[in-house]
Length: 425
Image 1: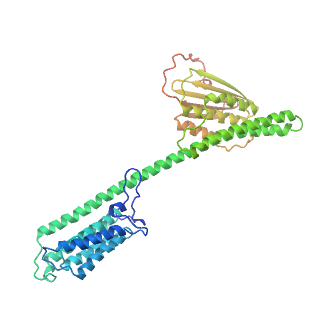
Image 2: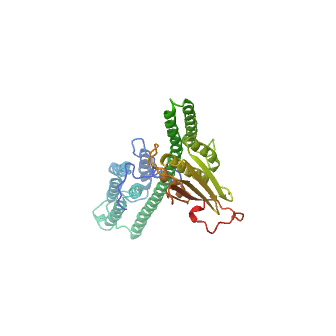
Image 3: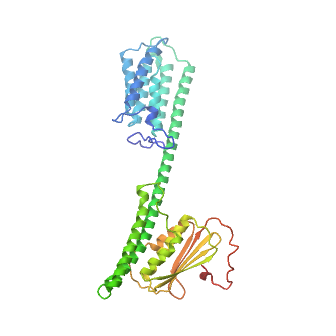
């Protein structure tokens, strides 16, 4: 858009990674008050001193007090070029036209016009800059070819058209340079916005990953603790020894949960540092089966196909899916048995968790996000997951996750052609 509104700092992008310079570095740094005092003061000295040197050899009016006042105003108004770029470029152009109309010598005053033009175009006020430059050039043509008869210096003639062509080329060069700087500034801003969006996206993904990990860790452990607490309360008076066993199980489950929570949260304190303990995977299934047994659930694990290398991300996702599926059995199923099948295929890892049901309709403190978390884990790896009632009663969770490229399973046992697809792991 041509006429975007400037920000409090002139719409300049702050410097950052990627080499994008800070806009005030182009036209001078600002002071604590937000005004570019150093660059404006330096420009004022250059214009004042340079005009005195430029006046030599020109048959124009001498640089008197009024000329100095005009030069001062033309430069001083640039103090507000970041906050009010339209006012700055319009004022410095008008004062410069008045300076030329009064017959004073040409000189560095045009640099002030260039700075004002740059500030307006780069901050998005292109029309104001073009109108100001166009008005300055048109006014100079009017003065140099018509009004010169009534304006100082006395006896002055019409300006040569070659001079007008030079001034027109100068105006176009200033505008083109400012437009180029504006385009570069927009590219810097777009690149910075893309970096910020990518960083925000990575942060959101990391928060989602941590939330998913914490949910899976706590949901399973708290379900075990809930069941064992119920057993302990029921047997506290009649069978203190069994109640003691339940409390020991609660202590072990809570200790393990705290360890996993610390591992997940350690990344917040030491970003980029390698984890002190390996992430859980299918190799930890025996511990998971033992935990389930402490909650009264008998788990049978079957493995099919030729065991292949499993990427760490797939290994963790597979473990968490099985963990959540067993947690749901503990919470919501009347069955005290579950069957876990792990199948290694060509490029795929297949998981199946079955229980015989029926659903109890009870709740052991779950959040209701377990199935959603499993689907998110599978989808993040390019896999699929299905969960729902199985034929004949009970509940089934099936997942397929990608493996790293491996050799074909030439040694895999042949599949029974009469087997139902749902009965293969």
